[in-house]
Length: 341
Ligand code: X2X
Image (cartoon, rainbow, N blue to C red):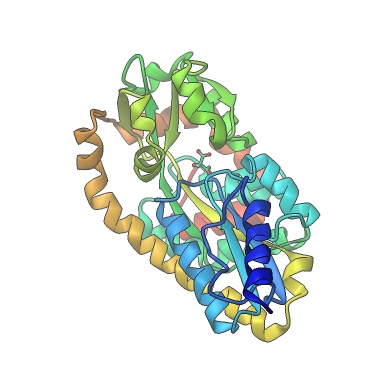
């Protein structure tokens, strides 16, 4: 191959990728050498540990498969909103995608079970539960829908409520509150049970929705409030810890099974290893992020979790979702975290 053709090929690659430039450079391997050229996409900022660690996993996969498996990383909704990316994953236009279990529940209903309000006391309950029986149950249901979920979830975090016009100090402050929630029946149901007025908006539109006051507030872990710069368009954050949320690393089953077993093993091992590293990154970040956000002007409000939980109970939230998830899934959750209703 002459230098001229190489350059032309590289140019072609750059042009093709120019609308959404992948983070993993393919320039370290000869052009077109990969036997499998796959895409991984997410909704998270480039600086978020989810993107950082999955990008590292993709680089390790390229190296350990001697360039046979190339996974280009498209973070930050470059390929569209979560709803769009889920469609792309299902059709095979996208091979890998990380998605909140709660949003995945639009396809796999039981996948929102980890989002039940105040279910997990802390991370010492989260990881054994999601790496254990409940995670296995959810993965089994995901497998029935043409997708394959890797064993290790990536952390998103405990969610907190931000607002622009007034702080949320008590459950009563949520009455009529215009809040953005992700696309998930459980999220909408929970904020209705709080008496709020929830609107479904994909994360790709959240910053703008807050900036233009389509909604007054939203809820997300502090790590995302920081990395997605939501503090620029919000004034207060109420520490509610109202649910724990994580990302399943999902593969289009057909595309994943097209890889020979030895390559599949490498991909799975590397993305699982990165999930564990990402959980540790967030644990570290959680020690400093409050100070960071205060420095950026966000005002913190502490809340009484028991009061918020009591509001959900009174509204019949737990009874309703116990019925929706069914005895097996609800029982598996309660076995891990104790009685909820
Ligand atoms: O959409 C959100 O709020 C986010 C980024 O936390 C999820 O992926 C559920």
